[in-house]
Length: 152
Image 1 (cartoon, rainbow, N blue to C red):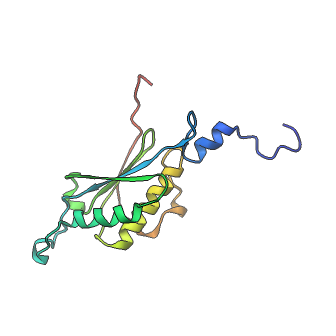
Image 2: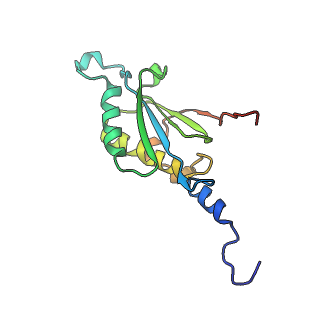
Image 3: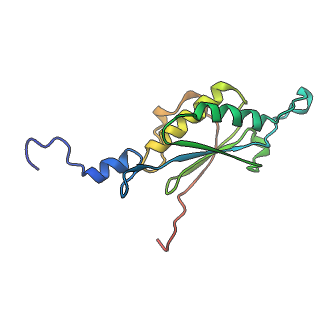
């Protein structure tokens, strides 16, 4: 290495470390999958027109609007009914996280979107605990390893 070189990391590695596809130089989006059928224990007594999942989904979608590297989708039932409201944070070739026990409120939505953004910026999907938004701490239900495809 020459004395004046500050960073020996190759350009392709820098792109990948920034959460971008190294081959094409594009961002690898993280998807927030939101269970829109989740109902918290007291849902029926609150006489709500929308499920708690639908309310949380709308708040997450609004918070994610314009957030680079983050997209949302709704899915009916993530099968975590004892942990409602549930979401999954996932991206191609990255670790997936399932989180639950969220209140359908703006603070939860903002924390979820902020964590998803950090996930999108990570090469592996792993985000250092010290960087986690306070609103996601204590909400992790499971971590799923990257699915190996193509005989790898």
